[in-house]
Length: 201
Image 1 (cartoon, one colour):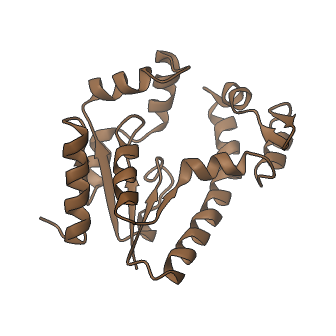
Image 2 (image 1 turned 180 degrees about the vertical axis):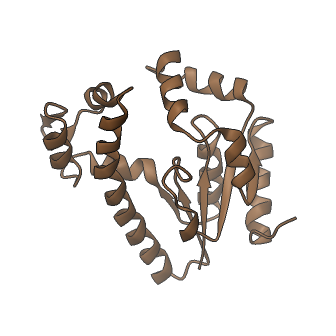
């Protein structure tokens, strides 16, 4: 089974690419969704996050969950705190990823895709066969992200500061998907890439 990584900065168009992959019946591991599950009711990250960052979880009718806004405020702009958080969350996400790949292999999938926003930042290149990077011009990226509820220039800048620059991502990619032209253009590029089996043009 081939394993591809799909990555790109915030607002670069990963959701369009993953939706197209799923329509092609390719299993996709969503790292962000895994983090949400781990921080939700019964999630394995809830207790260690409360221990490391007291007061950043809350009790709900379904059980204790991470208060994501409280946690964001606690770690925003604090590099050591962010490192502590990543040391809790990243190994748990890797466990989820391994279970996903095992299920895909059991089902006979020929290709599985790992949608991991911080792929290069967490050193994942040695565990995939190819890296697909979604990219768009900076102006389009910022416009997309600033339309999101609760997003501010300050928050966006803090997120971008944590991420590998797009130019470096593009240099390290095996394949690029350009999402700045149109949704249809990006979808077609994904379909072409899958049909080629990841062959280099």
